[in-house]
Length: 351
Image (cartoon, rainbow, N blue to C red; front, side):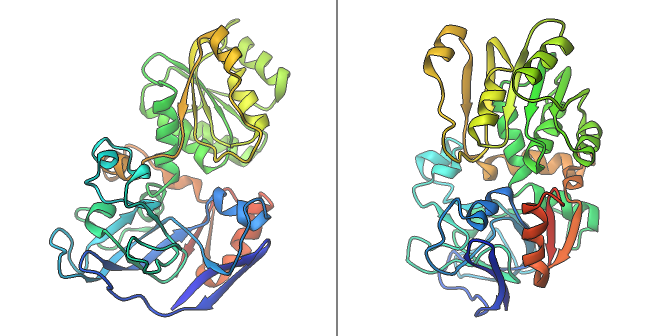
């Protein structure tokens, strides 16, 4: 099969790999119908995260079950499934408490499972999925989604679930005012999540017209292009002299965290989901003095997918709009370049 392999900074190649097969009784093999490039994939691409050896990459995919292990009873060949961005067992204390990203048997796409078997990356033609029944989510009544539904289903594997996590961590709810820092796919999904949870006013911080348009479509009431102190002042002006009840931090840099933190009113809440890239440490004295609560981290997508899937299937939300470019798997190197150069918000890859 063909699969995307990262060799080092700026070096993405599509290469031949062995087609996956069932290795364990709890495995299934999924034929991938769509995958994508994530903003976090850009960290090794840019050299921020080291690549020690050529590795399969990609952690967001959807597709059809092709073969199943002997212990699989809840999934069948032909089922259409969503793969969250990490493997989880569904039975350990963390999973039972909904924190599937801290599973005792956690594994990542492109890594290895508990038994030491290699796991395929998501940006390929097929993937062996360990602990398949607890990891995958079956999409009821769907076998071949149309393009729009396919895109929205794919967002549930990561970015829509992550935006939702940010909104929950920031205590978004009816009547709350919200600021979203970051206009990538996660930030835009954070806008949609805030709207879905009933926020009264949603301010999207963005300097890019194409991203602003999607933010407004997703429910943003205001756009702020200013940054730093000017951005904080604009938020205060828009909200009648106060800062936001809830702020979503969806980037992961020191600058984005400072922007987010200083946009929250005293007693408000900040939800952070941007993968930290260094320097974004929480100022405890400032939090102490302002009584701002801060929460977030890696989103337990497997926990959120069923709830969000119901809204996608009912047409209540259409997060797939964050995909503004569709390329073939063979064009994966261009997909990375397009996102790295901010020519695309998010690229969907078809096999």
